[in-house]
Length: 213
Ligand SMILES: [Fe+2]
Image 1 (cartoon, rainbow, N blue to C red):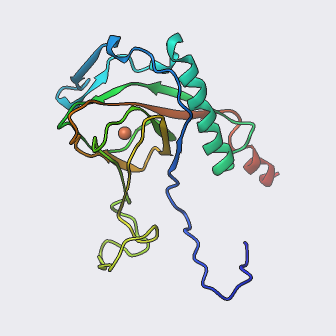
Image 2: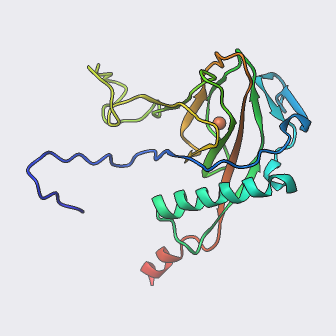
């Protein structure tokens, strides 16, 4: 543990939900309008936005440059920020394009069967909907929900939600279990984004076996 040299208080945001964002250099965006979109959910019901029927968008040849950029950022997050072993391979399991029309939004949800999730923003008009993250409703820290202490201001230690105002060419990565939603598109234009999920392959648990020997 690092010990501060000064006599100032030091607070460590321990055991956090690390959210990574970066505005990438501009890149060519393929013809999104040529993709097929639907608002239907596979199990019935409808989304309040349009989503591509192709759930492996980043495997399409015309998205190869974007796939490389996304993988680069995934590795920076997983191996640089989170220090996952360099021997592991993080790979994209699925990816799709969402179009939020004026008035569209996306309710709170998590991504199942995934370790890391992310979204790359392709077209972001002003006021088209922030990305909101939520503290786990059953989180016991910093205070348990059985004692809902009011705060005079919000900060990174006590907030129950945190919003990112996206920009075109920005990428955002986060643990898939982190609840999130998208605010209402209050602009008069469409909001385009490319969400994706990430899993891992490689030898996992080898270090534990080493300790047991
Ligand atoms: Fe999501």
